[in-house]
Length: 168
Length: 188
Image 1 (cartoon, rainbow over the protein chains, first blue to last red):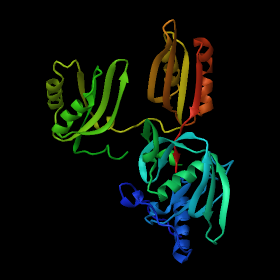
Image 2: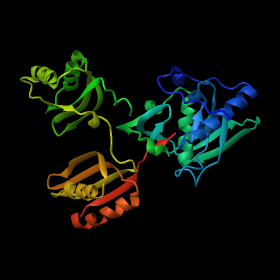
Image 3: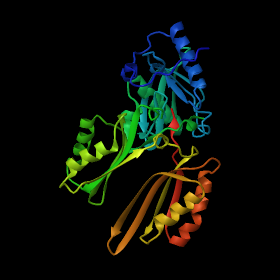
Image 4: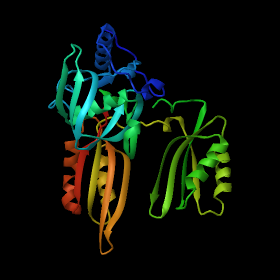
């Protein structure tokens, strides 16, 4: 159990393209544990990417099942190594906030449906379709693996302050 | 936002408005830059043929409102631009509104007087805090349409459905369409 501190911008790690995982060794398994612990520790958090805890590797975890936007439509806890979006379609705007960019929110357009492929910690390659809020969360976390923040994708000038209450 | 609590800083609200032309933002920010002011928060937009700027600026204490007014007076003299400066108290610097759900409300219909007043009075009486609002008069000159879009923070305990129900009776009374939807940001 290790809850890590969330790295915030302007830490340069958040703007780097993360390296693919070559082998799922103990280090990667420990990283996944830390990501899950950190996600569960952040009030209302639905996902954490490795660079957000200071590790520049293509690993992220997502779980939207407890979020009001995701509870009806989700695949539970996703432990994603080297995730790839195979295809995506549709578009919807949602106002996003990010633990690595505290106090700020912005409207971001994301695909509403996508096909995702990734490797699980046991080495199995998994592929499935995701939609709705889970698809938004996947795209947001995967952006972190390519050094993109939601600030790079703001679709309108309407931005706001993230009132802390909303995390709960 | 914790940046707003700095006892060593003096904060000011500045509004600038004038007939639109290129360079209003550059001229304004030049004055602030040369004085060593930091623009902490701002919103600027076109309103009709005018360009309007609202800014919260900070400067290390001691710093006077008079200094800002003098510099803006020099810069805006003969330009048709008006500038207004107000010193802010410490408790005016941070957002202190309700922390409930955030919603977006659209109101539109044939233009008539009282749309903004009636909608916002209804919201204010229920403790709903408007955080952003804009209005436009559109449509044909013979058939003008009024559009009001606002964002509001609901008080604890008031749901989007409640807010929607609250405005329902105004729909008929004012012959306008009103829709309310949740836009509370998602934490990712």
